[in-house]
Length: 325
Ligand code: AQP
Image 1 (spheres, helix red, strand yellow):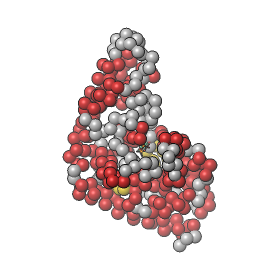
Image 2 (image 1 turned 30 degrees about the vertical axis):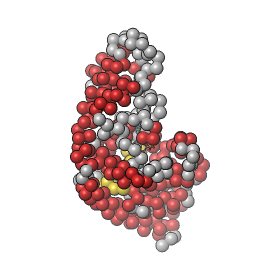
Image 3 (image 1 turned 135 degrees about the vertical axis):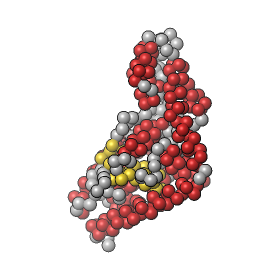
């Protein structure tokens, strides 16, 4: 039987280069090897402040971007998390085998409770338990994610071990699958590129905006004048070149930057051209597809039906095992 993969994306803002390089590109490649299930995880997105009036738009934006970036609905299953209520049912049950101390150690929880300290809620705290349910309800073995999510997948494995040990073998232990781009920094050159940090380039940004944002992005902080030699190793713009430029170009930029032969503006211009060349076709497809609500809704409904069938089967087994028939 084909191995199964699960991953999710939050409709909490515009899908950006971090999501694309850290997750989406890998998702597209892995659909060739796995029975692949991808979810727009709206229940996760409501754990931080959001605007309910635009939630449905953001969900369709996310789906359209994923398809435009290469996910083929004929080769994978796409659905909205909240349309399969078994996820939250299983999350409650998994919560009973999850240690509070483990949840308190989660880096994302610590960061988000600082960032959104007006509303440190139970949903934010229990986020990794719902994420564990998202994965194991499909008995997925692989979870392609960026590095920021590895800690949550480790916790999922721990929850699975505890559940299996208590109630008998039920779930496989899933593995995080990382691609080449594990952690993309934001344009501030410091924090992870993140929807809620405002340090992103989104996949659907107009070309001029992409170049304008790059022009303002932080480079090697010690390089103040054009004539100062730079250090590519600590420059976020240089690290982005690794994903968009050829090896020859990267070597050339590195050499020239170190001897002040090329300035940051030139370096950013080259990067901008490559990013725009890669994102333009994605953006074009997105702009056309995004208006086709019927097409997007139909893909999501098909995905949801398939996921409900699998999830209901899993829940029947789980209820039996825990004595709640
Ligand atoms: N900067 C990043 N580098 C590498 N991978 C990243 N991912 C996110 N940011 C980076 C990966 O993208 C997938 C989907 O992420 P998400 O939208 O579900 O959640 P997130 O990690 O919380 O994304 P954001 O952009 O940071 O959103 P907010 O600010 O709303 O929390 C995941 O596999 C993630 O690892």
